[in-house]
Image (cartoon, rainbow, N blue to C red; front, side):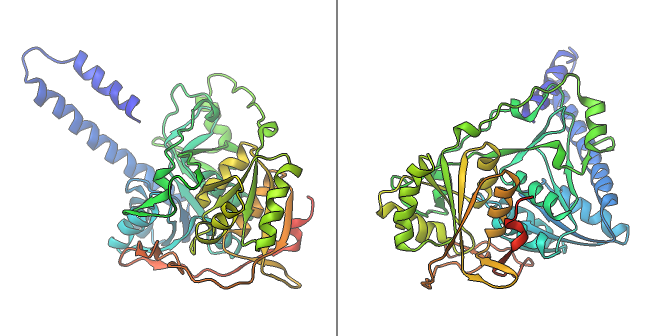
Length: 407
């Protein structure tokens, strides 16, 4: 929080003694502050560790600047068995390049999944807690964090997994909706280590960098001074009543496609735009194989369909904003358990159900294609899994019949 940090420096300059070296004096204050931050974060990490069960299986997203490692160390001191499942965190892959790397290097058990697999690991009972950081917290308990945090919270609520957040003093921020969400250039999604996923002028791209998670989805707020429930957090910090967020459902404009449509279904989807009063087709990357990039988006572009590409962890923010009119979900098999689809199908369906968005099931393309990526160990054919981290074994996802029934 650079604004908050700047306040410290402003105060130091105002109190600067006249008989000292300014550089040395300010440097000393900065070093003292850094030491305080390290101590405070260590204490906060211990509070988070105390929330975890004796056999902790923690799902995390993005990177918490080393604090997850501190939680692991406190768990070890408490005799708790601690292991982490880290999302790769597109588009910069901070989960793979930073979180998994730092944990593996320290000897902490960590495995890697694509962002779209969060519902799968929760549904399989592989996770008993979610811990994430927050770039900002609001007085009403909303938190703003790396894009993809909100869908984790929605799925945690669905599958009964505690969702804990490391927070800071919200200061003057009343509610999460007051924070303008930065839209980053599409080129950042389409380029990786000098390689292009698709030509930048061939497809529209959306990249909102953060999303907002409502307090109602959060189990515990772990602060520098205490642990809070949503209610106790608001009692301490809320200075004024948050305004009711304006609904954006009338501004819906996308049809979300998840899975592999056949060629004739691509034509059907183009016609569906008019029928559903939508303006564009929204295509996630569909990791790990990148079906959205390699197969779905190119096929739709050949039909001159207005197509927008996103990373898998962006689905949540478009549902939250009410911008998705309908989900077209493609399945590969139907049996007594339900319907099966590719990795990420459970997440797309869960988000649609949580936001009362209609779902249309369609049979997927059965043509087998090979891609440069077969699992999350690589991205665009380049290794992203750090030494010492494992790859979590993924399965095709079974969407049970009750998920399609109205609640």
